[in-house]
Image 1 (spheres, helix red, strand yellow):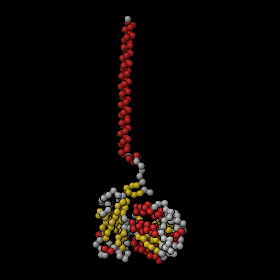
Image 2 (cartoon, one colour; image 1 turned 45 degrees about the vertical axis):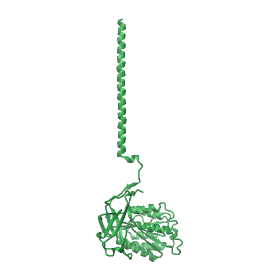
Image 3 (cartoon, helix red, strand yellow; image 1 turned 90 degrees about the horizontal axis):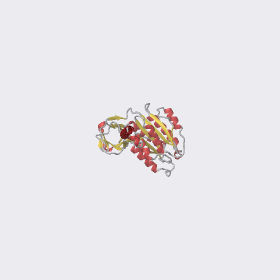
Image 4 (cartoon, one colour; image 1 turned 60 degrees about the horizontal axis):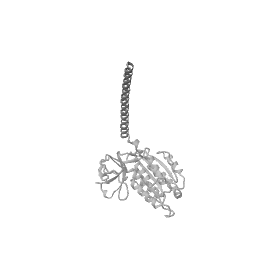
Length: 342
């Protein structure tokens, strides 16, 4: 009987032990479950915070960047005869952005601002007869306009675009040699030339100008007209187009290309000229030189945001000057608040 009681007591102790172990296992399991849930929740919170702090990682990278600063507007004013008007003051100008009047923060006359000129010469087969005349006239222009603080780069474009003068220089000997070594090609990559010249000018300081000598046709460019125009506008480049009309016959004229150049020149604040002879080429270059010496700089910090459009239109008028009713004011059409990252 004593053995039986000991056995019974032993079994009771064993049951208690198993029961204790079972309770401890359950508590341990519950604790592990709670820890697992806590870890899961912490991970979710961390991922949510990371997403909020760095949304770019979960979205496609954009090729555009916001670039709104001081807006420079180079203005050319001409009278009824087309002659540049000098001697105007800040008070003679009103400036609007998207119909909102802006305060002119900086006003200056052409003065000491450095000038960067991309001289782009069409060397396609269609211009082969006129190329010697273009070269001679271009050299005269470079000698007339350049100062030591300025820079000029020569571009030759046919089926490809080649920068004949590496970088920008005021060395007239180097410029003359570059112009002399231009050779005739085949097709015409006009828009590529505008685009590449604009990209190079984009990082230059001061006034930036593209002078095109071409018959107006484009046959092989990789970029289209819109891309070329935007590149010029973003670089703040003023485009002057000298359209060389075929002397022997008008049948070879590319009037569509001519109209595109005219619009491009107007949108950037430049001008276009027609030329059929060396004297007309010289006259066009002389007029461009005169205009560049009598420009005005109007700069402002935009005070209004009237729309979500990335392009802001600029309007400049001359007031309070004698004869101003007959003046023509030229400047770039506007600017992009979101700049392309080509």
